[in-house]
Image (cartoon, rainbow, N blue to C red; front, side, top):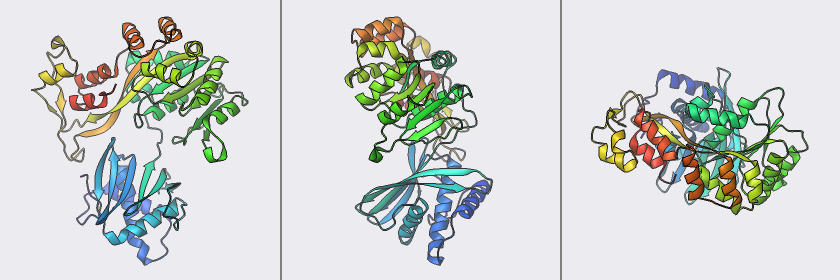
Length: 424
């Protein structure tokens, strides 16, 4: 359990900066309508401040049979933050729904909304709010919408020097398709927005369609999918082609219709960026063939596929050497001659990392350019192992190899590297 809220039956253990942040957020919240709401407003401010201080991506408000709890997702893992008094639950949920402009009288169906808070320092925090009716009441999830990190570059995202050179060459081509693959929560959106920001210039018209747009980039035309209104990825793509675009970003290729329009755009003078949900780079080829993309179109348009995962960074204040890891290293894929002269680290836990042992995350990447030899395999409808074998022959690292390199340089633990690449 991470450092608790003041509403958790004990003293608050936040730093002075967190307390000031909480006061700032409380001041930004609309004033409550009566004294009964005041504890809920303070609890909401405290929760938002703690999430911001810890860098949490999501806040989960979960009802139970005998009470309720608040959990924060920090570096991809949920940690309990508080178990507030039962009598505050309804007021807290109502307060969030009011701020997110949800119907407070509707508790039978899911709802989605958005709220924005401005701090005294002039910064804003945006949250996407989702409500879900459960057996014991409404469950809320507040997702902190990403803002651009201070260091927004391929290096900061975890690309190696060699990988960065390949990616930069691909995104500087005038046309073609670049795909980023990986499971939900693997950082695909941040990578795509990094690519777009690198291309963002007065001389380029960049259009992006997302579901929804979580990172706002000045100078880029961003559109949210609205399926109920008929605005799908494919519809938006067709509209983009009438807007004289240079670069098009599609949040995800989900179906054959979207894929068809995206590949036509990539073959007619546009650079198209998109994502797929596949385990590795070679798996994207099979997925695209499955949804109906013709092999010759795929071979002609596809320029680069990257696969990625996020691994947690070891806390440098408390990590310690794992001197009994030789057998584990060999099982993970290290050759015997590669494990001499260095020692991996273990996660421990300290005050700096709130007892977790990890602090922050970094991407691991597989970067697979589509070579002439690979195009021949695609036209022959080769998928899976033949493509992966050709990629390895051309020097493409697997995700496991990329993760193990992070173990060797002390960035992450062997346990974390193996867990992140089990399916990759």
